[in-house]
Amino acid sequence: MAFSEVEAFLTGEPWVPFENRPKLELPSPSERRALFEEGRFDLANRARAQMTRGVSYREFKVGCSVLAWHPTEGPILYDAYNFKPVKKEEKGEAKRCAERNAIRFAEQDGCVKIIAIVTASREKSVSEKYDHDVLHPCEECRSLFRTVPAIDQDTIVYNILDTTPPLPDEEIAQHRKAVMDFVASTSLPLPDNTIIHPPLNTEFDIMAEERTMQELQELYREK
Image (cartoon, rainbow, N blue to C red; front, side, top):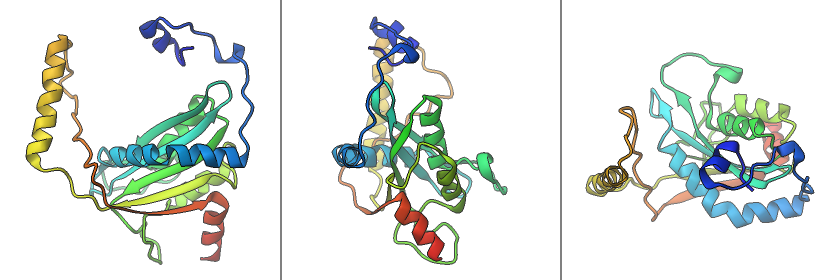
């Protein structure tokens, strides 16, 4: 069954409004943990890919992949990156962190549970008064987590420090040429502002920290 009306049009699959679909039973905490473990590698790579697309005036890039539960479709992944092209103070919804963007996508689709929030960055600090081995969610994101009904104490927070070197320029050039050749073979126009993102280095070098949302909140209460 098609997830969206656009997907139904493109695939020919039947489209049934979400409210008319049978509801799925919400997975237990142990079942949610199993879903995360099954998708951990994919979530990590998706967050890493989004990191390369981050927009930051100071090259402070963060990617995020969220594993969420939809009441009729089950587990779905949502990806996003941070967006701060100019230096200015931003608070609340104006602060477009990768985590906020991905969570909002899940909420807009009607997801009722955030199972895991996975981030990737080359940074280690969020400019607070203590150091981290990996980049933790900033204060604005931690405040957001407390207000989102789909996030609970069992939500998994998985933060990655990605120190993988980028691929050599010649491999990136080959990738871009392959994409352009494919587009040319389909006779489809490519918009002038299209960005062809470089591929990921699959021989990655990462460090990661994992904790539940309850453990994250307790960590910062202690600070």
